[in-house]
Structure formats: structure tokens, C-alpha cells
Length: 435
Image 1 (spheres, rainbow, N blue to C red):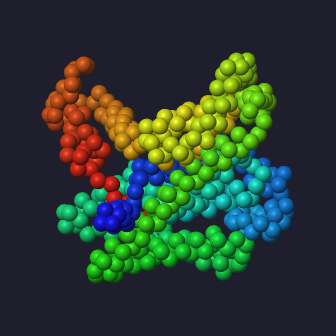
Image 2 (cartoon, rainbow, N blue to C red):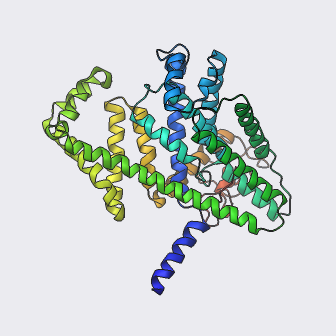
Image 3 (cartoon, rainbow, N blue to C red):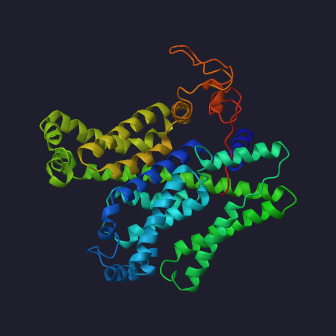
């Protein structure tokens, strides 16, 4: 009994003291924002036909459907071309800023509004990847997805360093951004634009009020207990949303796998063979013919897909087996992107799969990306320029740069040991930022 109570107390402390999975949630943020951003940029020349007034699904048809299903979309607030262009550009901008991790809390809300507005405007556009994106954009709002690999992390680290030096730092951009969002929300409510769907407006009001409470406590509260309480609540909400994302990914694969077992198309191999010969899903006809001509390959892909999807939820209890199946599913989605010409569906599914990636792998991935970025930045900013105070002396080719002034080793701060900007520094810490 004592062991059980100790385990329960340890679990409660683990859930409340920290936002778990910072690297996994960062991957989800980067993956889905990049997927949506690339889709919007690729379809930018065709945006009017897909979601705008020039599309076959006209504004009147969309209005009739939304009056029945009550879906939320800001594009139904006006049928003007200027309003559509404004919403589309805001969707692109919020995706880019969320990808960079700038004010992730506010950008995740705008990202959700952009996804729901465009997808609910023309419900017959898209594929299964859009359904995944539709769900995940809502879950992402509840996560603290800017703990790592974000501009929010860099700003929070510099704020802590300034406080350690005794400097007082006041954030004016975050409150101003939320004031603008609050004015937009009040204006939409005053103009009776939120009379359709009730869930999304209620969620927007709740998020705005929670952020206002967070700012007020941090600004006026003299004791740190109130801020600690809000931080615990934010951690619990984040961890709950992360659990829902994992359950959603498992549910997607489990239902897909069991439905495949029940169908004869996946038993005789035609479910893989026929799509390879459809013109809409054959960007590389020669490659599709090469794969479909090999009966053994078609059999392995057919039964391998079903086996992996059915077994994956059960492999979460074994880390090694889970990692093997996870690599197999990511590879499968990459093949689908190339062979069937569904890149955005594959990117959305890979982004959903990334919630199960090992933390050690993601740390190495982040450290490798930081080293590549440092080398590229050093080449762009330093190159072959002479260092100051060396009278034009250059480091010979093949010779490692020393620590003397003017060398590339000293001009790039992330390469110095003990520097807080260095991702490989053991003292490097990642702290979430509410904005």
C-alpha cells in the first residue's frame, strides 16, 4: 500500500511540476504548421478556386451547409474578396510564426482559426491529412509547444539572464498582441458573427480570459503562490492535451488497421494495386508500374501495412518494438508521398507520429541542426574576412581555428563552452513561456 501511494504521489508530482514531452510537442508544432504553410503556399495561385468566391462550392452553398452543421469559419462573415484575402494571408502568417515559435500561445490560436476557417468553408477539398490537421490544430492550443526550438524559448532565456543581472524587463509585445485579439473577438461578438458554432467561440473566450488572468497575476500579484498555481494548471492542461494527441494517433491507426482486416480489398492485394494505376495518384507512372509488377512487393506492402497499423498501439509498452514500427510507418508515409503524390497527407501523418519519437533522438536532431545552422551562419557572416587585430592574417586551409581573437571560433557564441545559447551545454535549460 505504501508503494502504491508513493507511486501515485510520484505520478501526480510528475504531471503537475512540468510540461512533459517538450521536444515531442515542439515536433508537433513544427510539423503541422509546416504542413499547413506549405499547402497554403503551393495553392496560393488557386486559392480563389479552392476556398474563395470563385470556387465551385459557392458562398451560398457553404452558408446553407454551415447553417445545418454549425461549423466555425471566419470566411462566412463576409463574401467579399478583400475579406477572403485577409483571412488567407493571416493563415499563412500565423503558420509561419508558429513554425518559428514566436508567441506560440497566440499564434496557435490564430493557427486554429485559420485552419478551421478555410477547411470548413469548402468541406469537400482535401484528404485524410486535412482531417488529422483539423483535429490537431485544436489540441495544439492547449499545449506549451514553445518550450524548445522556438523564439519564445530564446526570449525567456534572455529574460532570465537579464533578471540575474538585476535588470528589469517588461514585455509589451505580448499584452499588446492579446489586446488586439481581444478587440477582434469583442468586435466579432458585437457584430453577431459568432452565432453559429458555440464551441470554438467559447474556447476563444476561455483562452483570452486565461491569458488575461496570467498577465494580471504576473503583473500585480506580490506572492509567487498564485503564479505557481497557474503554472501547475497549465502543466496539467498541457499533459492532458499531449495524452489526447497520443490517443488520437493510436485511434487513427487502430481503426484504419481493423477496417482493412474486414475488407476483401486488403486481403487480395487490390487495395494497393489499383491506386498505383489511377491517373490522379500516379505522378510517376514508371515507378508505379515497377512496384505493381512485382507481386511479392505488393503482398509485403499490403500485409505489412495492416500488421503495422493493428499492432502499433500495443507496442507502446515496449520501447524498442515501438521505435521499429514507428520507423516503418514514417517510411511508409514517405513512400506514399512520392509514389502516390500525397505529400501533405504524408507530412500530416508523420507530424502526428512524431509525438512517439524518443527524446534522445530529438535531442540529437536538435543539436545536429544547431551545428549546421552555426556553420552556415559562420560562413555567411565571417567567410574569409580577416580577423580584427591580426593585420589581415587568415587561418590556413586545413588548420583548425584557434581561440585567439578574430577567429571563427570566438565570433560564434554557440561554440563557446558554457554559453547558454549552446544546445550541447549541460547547463542549458528549456522553460516554457506563456505567450
